[in-house]
View 1 (cartoon, helix red, strand yellow):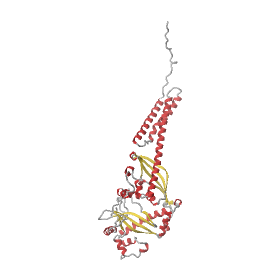
View 2 (cartoon, helix red, strand yellow):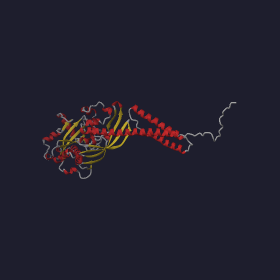
View 3 (spheres, one colour):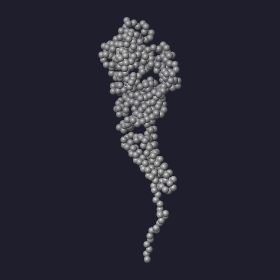
View 4 (cartoon, helix red, strand yellow):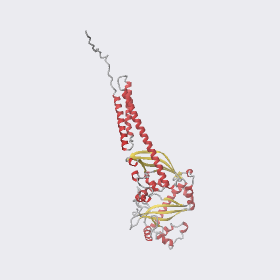
Length: 455
């Protein structure tokens, strides 16, 4: 007789127990996978778009996954078998850790690349600004697509196309300082103050110290980079008007030149006030060497030539006798010179210091206001009269020991220029520039009466 095997009847206590999976492990694994998908998709989209996928906030997802993974693992281990899912917790830890670590390394690499690229570009800009002409450095203040195809050797074309922008560029103090350095300069980069993603690119604020024979200047120097695949990658340009001097320690040369700019400005104001008051003979005397001023009379031939425009040039060149006489009539009319051209957004800078052999000259930008013709930009050139002062400036500029020259605060201590009490200035030329754009409206200043024409 056959026997049929039957399953054993087990009591509830003898049946295998069901161990539930910890909900924390499921949540940890879900968040870890979510982080992997989101960050993977973000980086893939960045590669397709041709620009880095830089967004540190995305690190929050794998960090949360890691935290949940640790909590879930501990929960399962401490449950003494009441909960399963230890393998899921470990998988969440691995996925979240690898995703977060990889993306953090990716972000660090981008950050380091941006810092290095910004510093390298700034070095190029300073080299261009130091070697001249200024149009070469100016081009590096334009974004990549704008400067594409522009020949930096086409000086005339650049001045025609970007006349107003060049005017603003030439007024920026850091550009003037490096331009006067005569190739003697050193730039020490001191890290990045901050950088941010704006307008589809990267604004990097570099901290640097510029050292020239005039002194040591600390600056925040902003540059902007944008990924432009059509130009072969990331292009950079300097945000020069936003460069900010945070400290200045001047050498003897720097203090001398600073004082010359202040006094040159005062000389222009004084000369324009003489014209305002109708004291043309005194204004004429300001164009003569100091020793010849007392002897100048109204009957002097030179005074007659002065009133007919002997100081005038047109765009740096010759001018016809008729045009000279017409411009002279406008220039020597009371309140014809606005010494405060510009606006709050585009101010005229201090006089530009130039050197011609042993001569030191100051170029001040002003405007000539005429009742019968448009307001015209003029450049008033003055010359420093003091052989000892000029010789001292030439010596300090040519010294090879400029790196060791002592410095002090820009306005601290006794004025260096007081060592030359016999210094004076004389107006040597007024260049009329009808084609040079105006900086804008500023309002009445020493060149105009209250409520009168100011710009």
